[in-house]
Amino acid sequence: MRWIFNHFVKTKKSQLEIARTLNKRGVLTDLGRPWTRESVHSLLTNENYIGNSVWNRGSTRLKSHRSHNPPEQWLRVENVLEPIVDCKLFRRAQTLLKIIHRHMSDQEMLDALKALLARRGALSSFIIDDAPDCPPAQRYWWRFGTLLKAYELIGYQAPKNYRYISVNRRLDTVKLQVIRDFLATVEKRGAVATYEVETGLVRINKEITVAIAIGRCRVSHFGYPRWFSKADRQPLPDIFVLIRMNPGDLSIRDYLIAPAREIAGKRDLHADDGARLDSYVFPTLMPLVALAERAAIESAT
Image (cartoon, rainbow, N blue to C red):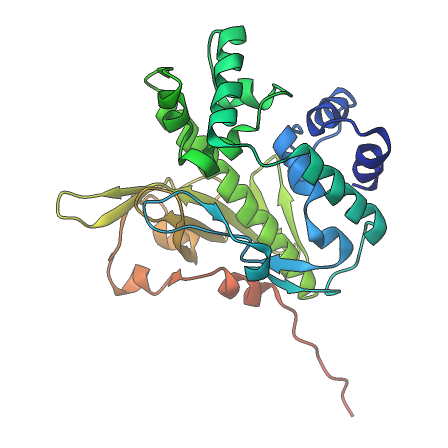
């Protein structure tokens, strides 16, 4: 992480160039994935590395895309984590990022997308993120609601299966961010939680295994939301967590946190599955965090 900050500030190379350098060296992210322009940008703007914890940087309303909140609405708690990066270096990186990511008008963003289409003959999030002269795909999501809307505005018709693939990629990003936030919260509470890339499981205090999945929301003919998820993976983990999305799949509704044996084999989960399963639904992952906490044992006198 220090190398990324130093390299970005000293060489002024783009985030895409840094991602390519890391991938050529075989360096993976903390979740065992190749680096992208967005993952480098996320690291460079993360105040956790200077010891701060920040919330409410963005918000999402039902059936609307995620929007950035102004800095005065952010909730920041300083010096609550062990700093990894020097504050002066972090501030220099933020100054460079502001220069690089100057505010572009809607038309400028669409012109850049149209020029990229003319060069490549097709568009996708991968093609967009690989073009240094074009804003990242995520910014088109934020500005226009979806990439499909941006495509429509420049007269490009995406393949029929694009919508399904695009939503799945976005949900995968949401799930990984939930896992990152959970690991950081557990660490702040003095416990240990790790994400095993090979198995896709979170292991708490080297004792409890947790499978975390994300469920797209589907509305039944009667107007009730339902989620589909395969909860019978083998070997069976101790706990199964389903991140249940709101209709439209743009924001998280709640979390189903249950012993894996209780819902093994279930694929169709409704909003009201009866008292037994409903008792496992929570607004946050704090019950899982509480499970990870260690209680201090006072010495006998």
